[in-house]
Length: 211
Picture (cartoon, rainbow, N blue to C red):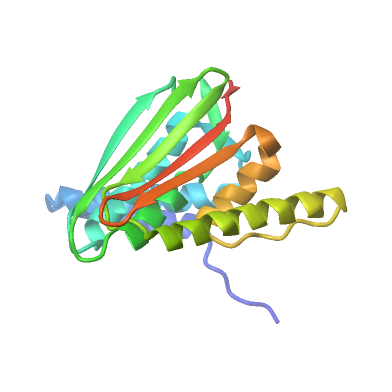
C-alpha cells in the first residue's frame, strides 16, 4: 500500500516562513527557536558523510540546547570551552547531542543548573568532556552503568570476530559508545564519573581526524 509522505523540503519551507513572520512581528526569541529546530532537523536528515567538522558538530549541539532552553521549565545554562581548531578537526556526527540530552533527562529534576562542554587536543587525540552539576548518580547506579558499557564492549568484539552484523545499540549514551567503539576500536575510550548531589562527567577520548 502506498503511503503519503511529507517531503522534508516542504517542512523546511514552512518553518522558514514561520520564522520570517515571527521576525516581522519582532519575536526574535521564538524565531531563533524555529531556526534552531529547522537546522537540527536538516542535520538529522542529512545523508552526508558520517563525519563532520568539529565546528558543525558543536553548532548542531548548540541548536539542540537552544530548543531545550525553550521547552524546559527551569533554567539550564550551557558553557562551551573549545581548545581545538574546530575547522581543522573532524568527528563522527551526532556524538555530542545524545550526551547533552542525557544530562537534561537524568541530571536535573526541577531545578536549574549548568552543562559544560569542553573540547581540547590531547596529543594525537581529541578529548571531549560533557559535565553537569545536576543530581548525579549513586555509586551503585554508576557501577551498573559502567558494567553495562563493559558488557557491550565485549559483545561488540565477539560480534566483529564472528563477522556478524552489528545491530543498533538504541539511543543515547550506549549508541554513542557503540558507534565510536566500532569506528576506532581500542583507540577510543569513554570515562564516566558521577557523585550524588554534585553531578556527572562524560569524557570521550578519540583519535584526531584532521581535514
